[in-house]
Length: 361
Image (tube, rainbow, N blue to C red):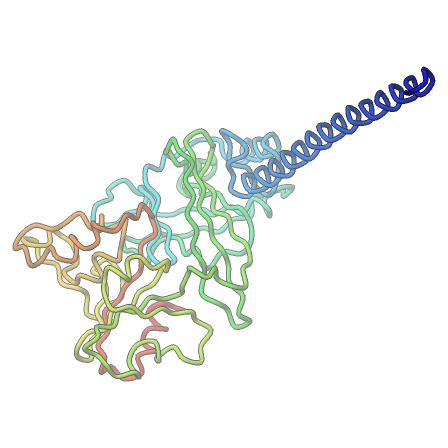
């Protein structure tokens, strides 16, 4: 039988054990909360960083030059006084097209020249450093995005530049599209991202140096029909170059590929371009007003033009003409990136040289 002292000691021991258990439980709970909060902060920081890079963390205003929203607003106030509204934005190869471009295909509100302002160079300068560009009425007579150096650019209507009339994207939702330039002699590229939102003062063209292409992006996609079984035709043309090419067997596959340029291999020794590309030395794709309704008759050239040609919308006339459009319609692709496409004969002499001259790489 335990003595009174022993009972008291046992009760004290039990109290201490229970107290330690409670303290340990509290510590575990506190540590769990701290770990959760730390994780939340880490995730929030990552999200904030990603959003900042994407220009979406600032709510109504797209930030520029890695500045805050307020700092970016001050920059806009200096260089974007009036707005020239842009309804649509798209690319065709390396060229930027907007609803202010004069393309004889469908766009009738246009400006003859623009001024590209690199905000990085303009800040603190007594005069705005900019480049004036005269625009033509063909796809390849528009703003050459591959020619731009690093920075955040806005576009002024050069005819009203003294008023700082700036191209302004009118889409309510945030718009962002990215293309990559061809490599230079040192293998360096530029990454070009278009950014726009109605609540932000100006359409932004962000340009940064990029060495490697993303794994899912290609310089050129090649359409090679399986009937052309000669391995020296197609991707072989680009062997020993710095270009990243992907060879596919159908127009539908080519449409899915992330690339700004496309080469469609055909019979013979001719090269065809779009009627809306200024290249007098080549044979343009025919336009038949009846069936094609002012569109290029070459399926690859027309459909791979993407957004600017309303790819997949179908064409009038005989069912056989609409096969390519029906194929493209099955591909869910809301991209505004259009491929600058050519059709080139498999028997042409020096195909790589010809392609290089047309695509300018």
